[in-house]
View 1 (cartoon, one colour):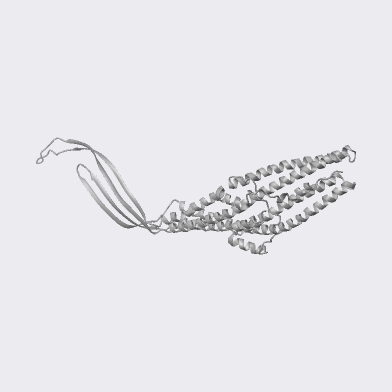
View 2 (tube, rainbow, N blue to C red; view 1 turned 90 degrees about the vertical axis):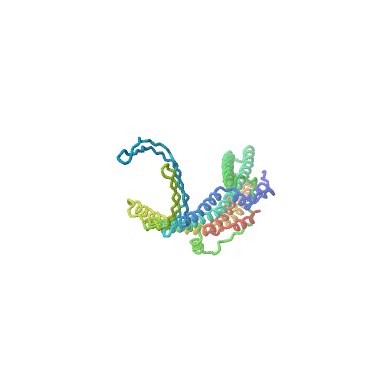
Length: 449
C-alpha cells in the first residue's frame, strides 16, 4: 500500500517556525513604523498638546489685561441761527447752517484682577485637565505597543492557520486518492471514499476561511502602520515560559491601583469636576479689579474745536446679586457632574481589578496550556503513526486515519495560537499596571527566529 512521504508531515510540524526571507520585518521594525504612521497615537499626541494650552489660557485671566480703544466719527448737523430783533440788539435776517465735522478718540485701558476666586479655580481645573490628558496620552503610547503586537502576531497566527489548512488539505487529498485506488481494487468499501471526500471538502472550506482571515489580519496591520510588510519574522520555537513576578494577583492589583493610566485619568477627571463646582460656586463672590485708562478725545466742530486728555485709576467691584436662578442651576449641574465622575472612578477601579486578576490568571493558564499542547502535538503525531500502521494491516479504518490526521493538525494550530496568546497576555498584564515599555517589546522581539 502506498505511504505518504515523511516530508509532508515534517512540513506540517514546522510550519510555525519556517525561516523567513532576510528582508522580513521583525516586531520592532513594525513598531517603529507604527510610531510614525499610526493615526490613533497622533490623535492622542495632538489632544495632549491641546490640553496643555489650558494652563496659560486660565492663567491669562489673572494677569494684566491691556486694551487699545479708538473710534472715529463724522457728525452731521443742521440748524438755524437767529439774531433777535429787540430794542438795543438790532436785527438781522436768520441764516441756516448745514455741515459735517469729524470727532475721534483713542486710549488705553488696563485691568488687573485683585480678587477673582473663579479664575483661580479655573487655573486648578486646567491643571487637572492637563493631568488627565497626560495620563490618556501615556496610555495611548502603551496601548500602541500592545496593538502593534496584536496585529503582528495576529497576522502570524492567520498565516500559520492558512498553512496548516493547506497542508491538511493536501494530505487529505492524497488520502482521498489512496481511498479511490483501494476502492477500485476492492480493498475498501465506497463509504471510505465518501468519508475521505467529505473530509477533503471540509478541508477546502477551511482553507477558504483561513485565507479570508489572513486578508483581514493584513488590513489590521496596514491600519496601524499605513503599509504592509511583505513578510514577518516568525516566532522561534524556544519561547521562555515565565510566570508573572511577583507571583501574587493581589500584588499586581495593588500596583495597578497606583499606576493604571486609565484609573489615573478618571481621578484627574474627578478633580476637574470638583474644581468646576468651585468655579460655579465662586461666581457668587465679588470680583475686585484694578482699572486704569488714558484717553484722548478731539472734536472739530465749526463752533468749538476741542481736545481733552483724561487719565483714570480706580478699583472696580462686581458682585452678582440676582441672576434669575441660572447660577444656582449651574452649581447643581456641576455637582451632578462631580457625582458622575466619582462613579466613573469606582467603575474604573473595579474594571482595573477585574482585568488585572483575569490577565494574571491568564498568563499562568497560558503557560500550562502551551506545555500541555506541546505534549499533545507529540502524542497526536505518535497516534497518527500508529493509526496509519494499523490501517495498513487492516486493524484501523480510513476514518480512523482521517480523524488522527485532523487531531494532529488541530493540536498544531492550538499550540501555535497558545504561544501567541501567552505573549499578548504578558503585555496586557504590564499595561494594566501602567508599566508596559518599549523594552518589553524588545524582549519579545528577541524571541523571534
